[in-house]
Each structure stands twice: as C-alpha cells, then as structure tokens.
Image (tube, rainbow, N blue to C red; front, side, top):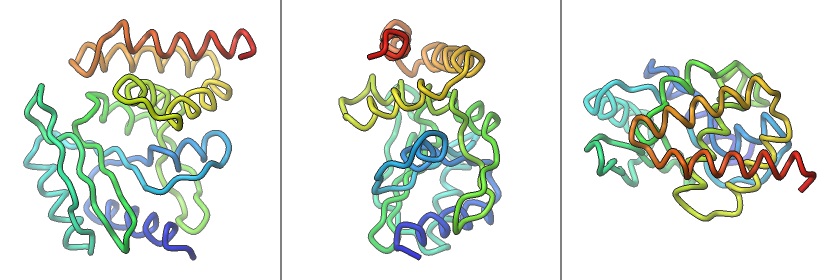
Length: 196
C-alpha cells in the first residue's frame, strides 16, 4: 500500500471513529466518479453545525495521529472554513464551513467501494460540480477546470439540475457571486454541448 493509500485509509478510519457525517471530495472523488487522475492530497467535506463541533473534530484527528497544519476561517461568517492536517507527509483537508453546502453534499453522497479502503461515502457528481465551480471562481488552477469538464461529461440532466441548485445555495448563503458561479457552470456545460 502506498503512503497516499495509507493516508486515505487512515483519514477515513479516523473520521468514521469520530462519528461526524462526511464524504470524500476533491481529486480522489472526481477520479472515482470520472476517470483516474493524479492528486497529491485527500479532501473531505464534513457536516459540522458549529465551530465547537469543528474544534472537537480537530481534536479527534489529532488524537488519531494527524497533525493540524492550518486552520482557515471564513472572513464573512467568522466560522472555521477548512482544516488542513498532515500525516506521514501527506495532506488531508477537511472542509467544514467553506462552502455553505456541506450538509447537502454529505447528504447527497453515495457509498463507493474504494480499493484498499472499502465502502466510503463519495460526493455525487452534482455535489462535486458545485464544489469545483466554487473552487474555479476562487482560484485559477488548471485541475479545477479540467475536473469541471470531466464531471460535466459524465453528468446526466438530473445531476446538472442539482448542481445548479447547489450553486444557487452557495450564492444565497454568501459563498460567492451568483452570476460568477452560474457563469462558470454554464460556460463548462456549453463547451461540452459544442464539443469543446
């Protein structure tokens, strides 16, 4: 088992034992839902109702051998947004209040049997589309754009409708400009429709 796989297994086991609802997101989840791609970190979205619960999560991860590397706060809400942990040199990011749709993404996740890990909740195509749309609006990384195209290519009409609903929720909850978010998602879907 590679160091990356060990970190993924360890993070899933830690999150399960802590007992908060969570789902795999990021590059590993996109690879699970589309086609494999290289990634250097493990990302999860965790449903926490308060910063107190997020702090309990951080303490639980520390007790299970994960070192907290960074804690990012959402300046709009004052809530903890993302917690970054290190384990054996590998990065594990936990989104706890960064998107405004943590609960919806976790609720929409489905169980996938991951090699070496076993059953794990993985964010849906719609949830990943919404998260990658937000990421693309907030930074200019080629991986986010490529992931959007991969996800749109496998999304059915129902998933696209749900992704648009989630993007609207992000905007309604103060996570970004509605026009910018919808603009990114529309641009990617139009590119697929036109064969580009």
